[in-house]
Image: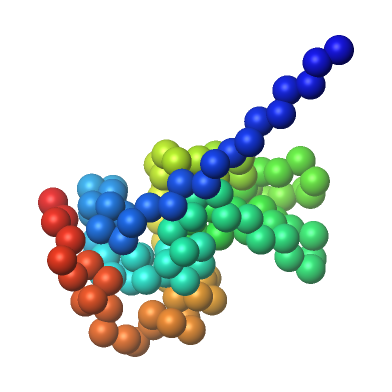
Length: 139
């Protein structure tokens, strides 16, 4: 009897690659938040790591680059989740950021903006964020 083990290699984007992806996805000035806000938040939540997972004391888990919580925003088998983003949590830890970006937009739209993310509140809110996209080709 064989056993197949799948190892997920983390994809860690560069700041400028993310600036381009985020810009193309319509995040620049989405709900009034500049591209710098999104890049700063992603860095402070996951260090741009698509496979980042953080287990929390309440039994839920934060997933992916944006550290989306399993209890409220995505579906994971362990809990009775609300799954407001209507996405499997596993879809938030892939190299394809489409589902993660759609979910992050939904969080910003349906909650108190970017205040959902503690990393953003602590390190980005109210600061000059122009350096986060400095030197990046954004189109």
